[in-house]
Length: 313
Image 1 (tube, rainbow, N blue to C red):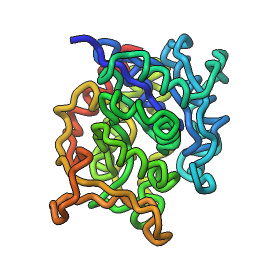
Image 2: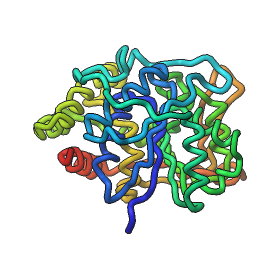
Image 3: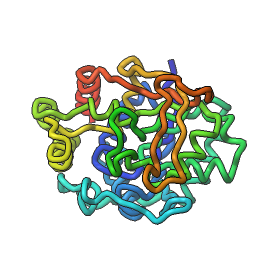
């Protein structure tokens, strides 16, 4: 089977970095056509810098990295330095990137790739706010029918929210964009907090990253050392959740995840519940299913895969 073509849309972020590393370490499963950056965890100048740092860490300075939207469609930008540190990649000491940004806008790259390849060829893998994806859909509505799948990290149902009581960060930052994406008609797979909070980097799992002894393995261990302090204090958990690598892992081993094909709507009106993913898990409405909303993960299998693949870098 040929590797599936993907575009990673991202706002790195330590867990975004791990997701990118997993993809770049798995060429037999996924062919990364490019990385598109959006404002989210930190502002756009830092997300574009961090994406290039990660590509160089993976030994892939040839990977095109594009700058995208620097603010949400209709709201002020909310960032998450309180989680990821002032650079977004706090933890390891990594050199500034040498590779340049690719010429052109991320949104145009997404549109061009979807129009260049046969319909159903490219999967979009958004790891941050959905501003770039929504903007592409607004600018070129024809691409919706050409998308193989959108596999995204965002939302939550049983776990509630992590930035407000009801909203997960990626969806909350740009709920209007999320609403556009969830209504676009393309097949959607969602990795919500319900799954990612079960993918915890325990001390044993982090020691396995560090024991790889490679720059990538050590950097990943240092990243999770840094950002786990926030989640341990907040949730009382015994490790930090690796949110975004669930997206990449699904592209490689979908059998690690289980969920339901349900209707998911995005709250865009109420400030109280802004950005909530209203997931009809129990099928209590007659709204048509529009997303496969994951609910469970084989965490041991996930971390085995992640450690094996990081060892390649």
